[in-house]
Amino acid sequence: MRAYDAWVSRAVTIGLDLVDEGRHGSSKPETEGGPILAPGELRPAGWLRSDEDMITIDHLSKSYGGVTAVDDISFRVDAGTVAGFLGPNGAGKSTTLRCLVGLTTPDGGRALIDGQPFGELANPAAQVGVLLDAGAQHVGRSGRETLLLSALVMGLPAVRVDEVLDLVRLTPAESRRRVGTYSLGMRQRLGLATALLGSPRVLVLDEPVNGLDPQGIVWMRDLLRDFASGGGTVLLSSHLLHEVDQVADQVIMIGAGQIVAQGSRETLLSGGADLEQLFLELTDPSSRGRLTGGEVA
Image 1 (cartoon, rainbow, N blue to C red):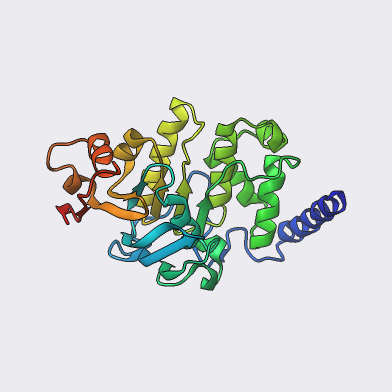
Image 2 (image 1 turned 180 degrees about the vertical axis):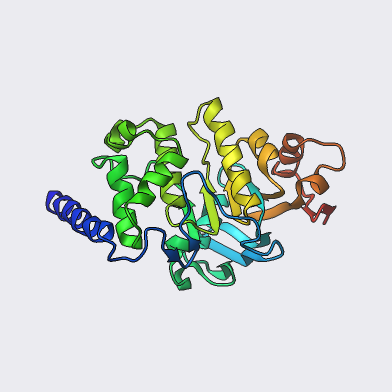
């Protein structure tokens, strides 16, 4: 492991020297996901058509042994949308997200991003930003080293690291600390910085506000809304129903591996119930009601 870490550190040093010398092109290169953006800048309006299905889950199924985790589910998320993906523990949220980003192979159906499986995208990291587990980071590297290594792999200039650090509000001093000393909130910010590094079109996030303080939660909410306003697509899994209610345009609820409700936030809540009431009612194991597009199925 020490030899590997030494090799990685050397690779980062050599690779970033090449990037800084301009051998990877201009200081703001184009990627498959679009142009690299300036500090604090998210996707420009009109970059994507608002009627594009950027995320498609089509009759997706997955079992582990004799346990069905996801049972023939389907939903779509358009460009310019924040979609809240809600469900109790064990409902199938994480399995669905893992299938979407190529970490788990489904038994049936399809999980597509911009019409393609994740593994067939020309440059996945530049098109899809993923944060599924903020704790899955190398504790021996600094936050900055973590981002520099990712930038090297993606062929991005070192300046992009400084840009995303600024965007997620990790200070230079904090970025030089080892990840093992980070709080959960700081790891969430680092994970989001990694997800945003390639200026992606789509963000797939699992519990991104976990560990953030109130100011951090408001900051995350504003960032996701700005990302969607600029044409980006967000699929957000969270147990914090109030925060999803604050930020989501679309709500998808899953219970026991099946979709129990989906539709626009306004449509699903048009009956007068709040999001928490609807969630508790529809994800209760004894409930058999389902809403699709705001109608009981």
